[in-house]
Image 1 (cartoon, rainbow, N blue to C red):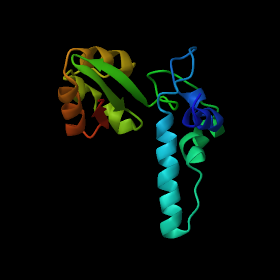
Image 2: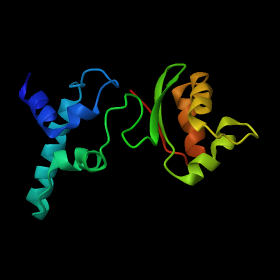
Image 3: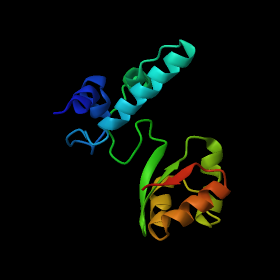
Image 4: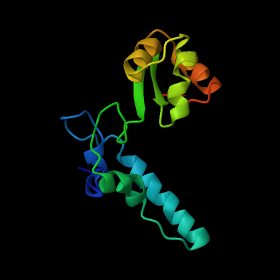
Length: 144
């Protein structure tokens, strides 16, 4: 294990990444190394010290959150397959849930939004999903 992966493991971030019930994902270890560089730059410029690992993993540790694969630790964001890749959509606010009928182009309110949203996204390109979501002020981004 290289030093970046070991740091990723020590930080607790490895525990939060990877498939549920599977091994931790060390492929993102460079994220922590970059976050450490950024917080060091902030310290140099402002004198404000910050622990990059605590910033990235602290809330999850405090709330007892765990690895959930394609679902964010807090549950409000999911990675959804599209016809040409993947997109991330976040529904943390009540307004986001209220926007779902318009997003899905239906008159029906969704009591279980994720299955409907997943089925809808699976039939569209990532760009189309993101464009429609952002039009309705729902946070979304294409991956890759």
